[in-house]
Figure (cartoon, rainbow, N blue to C red):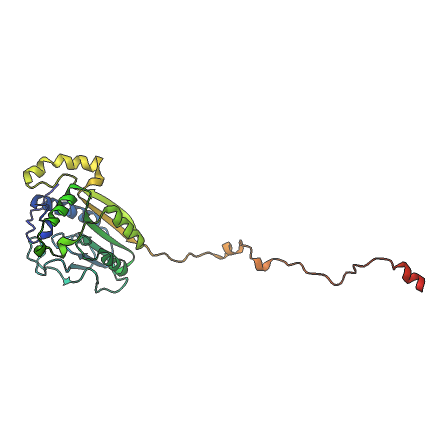
Length: 277
């Protein structure tokens, strides 16, 4: 795997993983987004968070935005950020776009750092058009990477704990349930970087064989997961005239009625009537 030479100096939320692991995390996600988003068509695309990941660089939509959130520094001082910097700053829980206006949304580790990930997902469901797509990445809490990240967050002193350090990681299956409740259908799911997060490049290279075996035998324990989901909107179902005619309506059934033109009495007169005459 090609390693991106990036020190990620401004990404304090990745400090518990260490520099070598953070570089491999960025490299894996950059490779996946370049492949998956190259053929996603539309007009408006948004990446919310982590400017070091250029998720939309292979996408061909004419209107693209890079937004930074309330849990990230306002100044793009980190290495690897595009020279133009972010186009806007916004709160992850309230977006300035109207409903049904975006074709693609990318959330690289945005939900796990947001103060209210449910509100952020609701905004995604609101601004995406029907059949719009969302790509989400997150650290797997059931992996070596997730365990090290959460352990490092607990060791941060209280005065230095910010919104980006106090949030908890979101499990893969829980995120799928959230998306299903909001009307999304997961199309693609992948796990990556199964090797332990070592503190040096030498050890990361030595443990690379664990990542190769992990992708084959225990992918569910990968350090990072990726989801691509599509917004589904149920619509009406057209039934043509022929199918309507095959259904017998109760209103057209005949109802029996009593007849008044039929004499129901005896055919001959009674004997007393004849004698009286």
